[in-house]
Length: 411
Image (tube, rainbow, N blue to C red; front, side, top):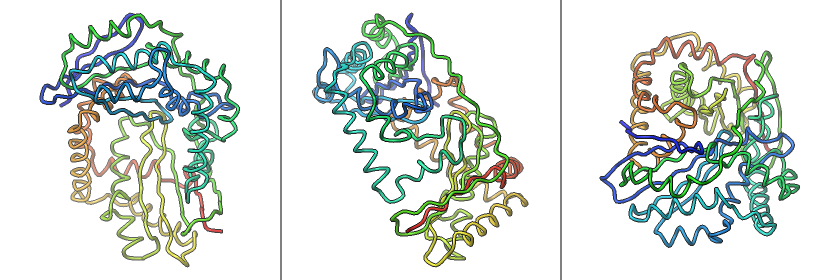
């Protein structure tokens, strides 16, 4: 069980403390309630750009990494469509250094033309290397706008296109920062060898005077219900033809989400899954195949992806996948098959709580969505899923009208 205390500063910063005196370390995790979905459709990639800009130095700390390293800290960050997260792991006796570092860049990030140009080049190079010049790298640049027509999940965190970052001005960047990177739009989690009283004092000392921003009330366009199958074919320099099938599914906090998550495990989590056993091992149509879910905080995607063996057509591969899908939509799975994936998922959940950093990120993610009181219900939700729940999720989600198909093959 993950236990925590929490309080809120007058400027709106929500602070959570997870005490663990079995470790000499502390984790300082600052999560901002901003992701790629919050961007202007004509100025995408800004949340990811800020992941880099925040390491470009603040007014009082020109080199964040050196200051962190001098305190024995390791640090990193990540951005998704839903959030942006920054974290440090450091010796508990140097915890105040983390407060100093993060409060200074929240208060006074260095908005210099030089910093923007340096990070702009880094992001553009990342866009080219990871998305444009890597085999299968641009898959989601095609899949997202195929699956989503209206919701801002239709672009990836890197952005719609390079030009949006190329054309970003210093004023654009400042406006984005002061809208989202405010204490009242953030969740701070401090975990490890500390006390709630110490964190209260340090939070007030370093963050208490930072002015809040205008409250951000998210009002994103809702994705219309898909009523017909969509298709797209793309050619690229890749070694094997690939087939992607995505279906709209619920967000990660809905009651049916756990059943859908387990459904994806049954279909394609491992080599013992149905898709692998039937389509890779028995029929030898695919070189590899898997199923997963995006786990988004708004309506997400159920994803099936596989690489076809040579001389196997897209149509043969897709037909075989639908046969596996139709079986799981027609017949309840055996109890022992469900119990097997439950055991694996439960083990994953338990193992995820071993690392102090994972616990901190987990608390922050739940708190960001006002779900912190549900954080310790994950195992119970798993155990309560029935074979009927799996059948209903399959019948509700895995339909042709709810499906988008991408054929991605070699030229």
